[in-house]
Length: 303
View 1: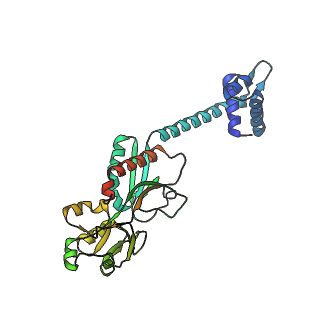
View 2: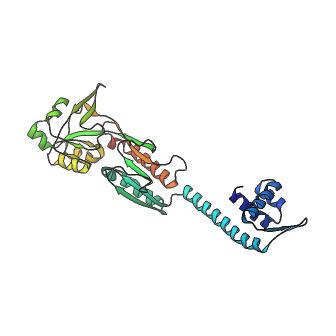
View 3: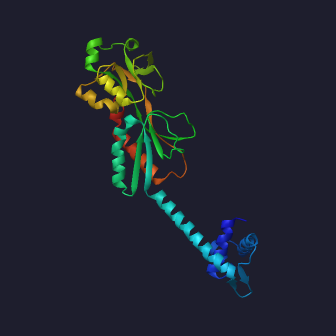
């Protein structure tokens, strides 16, 4: 029989003073309570209870076993209470891995989370390579593209688009691009994680899809490095809108081919378990969804 159930039945008999009272407390039959205690005694090879028609009393071994068993059950109940509290209220440590150039976008969410939940700590790590959430102990990963691992749970935070742009100096030196096909002859700096490789994809304002094969002298896993290269006039870049919005507004970068919109992508949160998501993960993701909605124009300049 189930050892935990047998232990619970035994402690229940001692606490209530009899099998019938224990059965009522545990919502099981008196026979089942008796069977559990008997199974426990058989497993241990000792008698725990002295039974008479009038009362039940502990043996010497039973007394020692009861004291330890009651302590174990109390500690298990306390552990359940702690787990329930952690599930209901964000606390403990939230470990987040983020794509590097997403950090400026999610940093306000992290600070808002910490302000709202003082019992919570956040460890925010960044990088462009994929991480194993379970092996490396991360609660959630934030990415700009969907992972290939289908066992992970993916929560869409927002849709977003790149912005095709370059510095005014680059446009003055090489001429502003007028047609999509001209990108094939320009130096285009590219992010290594762009989902379509060296084929940049767009949607024309009339709805038709278009693409162009590009080449360039810089491929990087850093959005910030590509932004810097564009600012310095190295070449043309497809950059996340929130990464270059200030540069576009200040005129440090200029948008190219405004009648072509880069294809829509998804900003996502990835976590390993669908069921019993902890409060800290759930609240963090909900805040990210809200922040993404508030900043939609920044994420997708074409929205």
